[in-house]
Length: 192
Length: 181
Image (cartoon, rainbow over all chains, first blue to last red; front, side, top):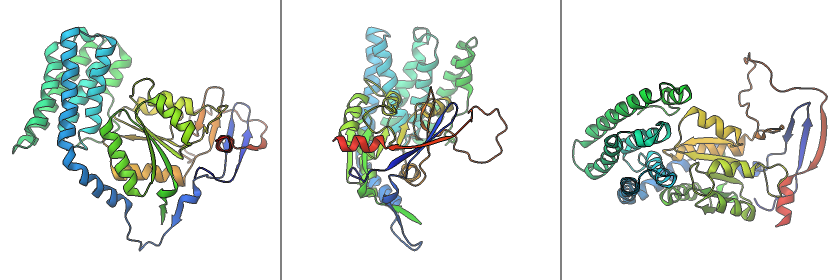
């Protein structure tokens, strides 16, 4: 697509804005196929993703260890912009990746930790155990996943952590309405 | 029914997490894409954007140096030499409504919340390919039309001011950019 023929923009100008349209530059990549076409690119991609799944356990362990390392750095050096950022980034990555890797409860625990980091008025005032429990929960969920009957326990553990974290954040932000609103707002992602 | 010829599309993937980049690459290749360039931070992505002129950008939000939001803002510079119109799909772990609004106001075309799925990614790509929105330029915004709902049921105040309409043709910045490389 990089060397297409030049196209013109059409600009409609109004009092305080312009509306700019151009012929769809990507139109040429659309191909009409009969309804009977059996090719399913989504199914193909899901199969390819399943082919990667042998790597997921190792990847998840790497992500969990990164989170623990970020926590260890905070225990050693205290909170700074850099240590806070690394803890958030590690937790945020797990929040986004863990369900894909087959560890949705680890993702939920990591999300709860992200909320604490984002919304606690002062991280130094967060009970150290609250953060430590989140880290330990992620590690335990990753470590114990292969054992039978741990999925329900992992889910319950994450829910309990989220409940405690939300109670702390709601109290700590009682005079900060913008944070309170964000804490109490429903997620745009459907619940499990 | 329409399909996308992915082998004619050039993608730029920007995510600091190597596992997520691998997953994205796997998905895009299995859709049929051949060209998917990868960057692990916003600064590198911006360089690659200018160099490779991708058709579609898929970016994470949280990244070092500058993040996906800043990357979107830098791409959406109407006077820049690069192409300010490329679709930007933000793929992120952020799942709060206010984040969607902030991303939209930075000029992001589509928002996709992790965990990623093949179906979700395909749908977003299909949407930017088949249903591009016009761009709006105001004093404070340049990006895809933020009004996605075309029904007449909106009852709030009209925030855009009308007035005389003037239509002018001008060469695409995209073509300027492409002819420069």
